[in-house]
Length: 469
Image (cartoon, rainbow, N blue to C red; front, side):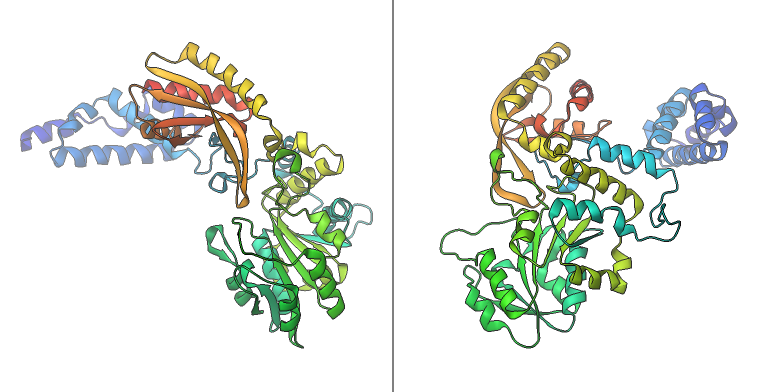
């Protein structure tokens, strides 16, 4: 491209005011502001000038008003696209950590909508007119559901573990089985949390075998508590041994030392009827005599991200007085969503109202019926060269929960003559809303277990758009 050609092309670039008069651009001014739109126009025009000066031949087709209008529309749309967006989880992983774990119930969503734009009585007693404590919003529900003396909420289970250790064991020893020194997602390691809390780790037993006598032998005047950790994301088999919970409870009580159990996933319902039998239930641990339990709220409980500490009031009271409690406290929207979620357990409707539990309880036959109906609708809209079939498969709970449990399901397998599976996965991921499938053996797979019925129309639209590109 000669210098004279470049100068000619630069002269043809429309002015900012000209572009502002285009219908497609003027509508953005009405929706946003003139300053915002002008700034983006200037950026696009400067990029176009730079492309011409560098000799980029493709810039020739870009300098017309129509081309710039399309380019600006795409740019402005991208600028206003939020970074955090709703997505369709078609992977069959129920508690998908990368996709935000547990979706909230309808009641929890309504609570967020009602509270988010308003003042609330977060720390205000409506009866007395005086100051209250935010924990009182959900503690009565937690005490009723869990059968405990006291309970408090913090921003996640890692915070719960840290606060317990920092409050009850700073500068003193915590006895933990070597087989329970776990690491979960995000490099959260029990030994690291112990160290940061100020507690001193006292390991007992071996990786595969720990007995009650190991705990008993390790107890000394500097022992603060016994810690039992549920291995949420792995299991050991073979030549293994772990003390039964009643035996540890008996030992702790005989020594006058609190027993703390981190049960991880926050299971409050017996899930054995649905094939999940290895998750501890919070109520059972507390009823058996564990002094404190802690767990996540955004996993099997099915609520917002938070952590619960529940148990004896003497220990909960100390934790509440810890100055660090303020750094881990929960804000009003989490309290609202958590209260709405817990209400479903209180009324006995958790299985039907909480999405995570509803997904777990869905039968293979129910998913097959939904998948068949979806495939029939899809075949009417998809072009030739796209094949859909139902295949048997498995869903998983995910989120570091139930690592050995799988849920039988039916998958929708897509094969396109035009697009490879990885290409189709990428196209689906870039749709609005984004769709996250799984890819196996060069097939794109859709598991409707983790797709709500109200999302099916959007899923079908995304499939049609992705396959037509």
